[in-house]
Length: 384
Image (cartoon, rainbow, N blue to C red; front, side):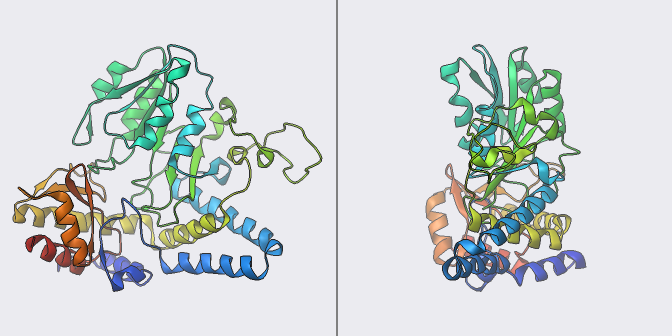
């Protein structure tokens, strides 16, 4: 990869300087849980020092810092801070819709048959309300748009899909899917956990009603620090299922018990937030924004393209679609005749982190991974 553009080399160099994990690992598992960058660790350590040394008097400073996280979260989605609600997980963001709509028996939700369970169970939980969940078929992550259309009808209330498939890494055409939802006057809900932080995303160009995601993957934040985008125009169409003191206009007036909802998405934050986690997430997001998501995406796609080329030379079968508009940071593959779990264990013993999902192997490099990391991966694969 000697002809790698200078901009990619420089992005990798700057990014890598913030990643202590590189001292031990060639890390290719960001689609599962990312290692913590140095700025994120420093932000959480600062919170911990203040929590131990100051306690309550430091709380207002923490609250100000998570409002900065609201701003960086919005920046990664092309949204406004008023459209960001902090949640505990991706499921929580999807459940804002699942638990917030006025469902009627006979309504239905259309999703895909390869979704991660976070985008399945919130819809299946509506069975007792008489709501049907319909699954459109996929082929190695590719979506049959005609099949999605055929499942939608006058009772379709929601079309809910992952932007990037967690297993195959296929990047979906959200514009086409949003149009199908619009034609049926249905909500369009997007699970964006496997793309945001690695690839550019803009809700102004992709008209989603709700986008849900956790921060521990490509955004490199702690687990349990998550958020959702709720389109401002849709805000009043969702019931706040988890009503709490922090949902109110004047949350610190504990004497005034009156339902007066905040006029922004923070109305869904019923009570105490995950201060340390959200502070850490904000530090990770700020680092990614400073590096530039466009630059990070270029570095990721450059390396995954090279990985696919070398996998083919090795005789592996690449299962991920790799068309120009289909690629992501995830590459799913199989080694002929090899047990995926055994290959993963072999790689871990050699300081190479990757995943095994459904019997196949999955690598997911980030913008700091280098050709030298790729060499370590292939040294491990070739010695299996």
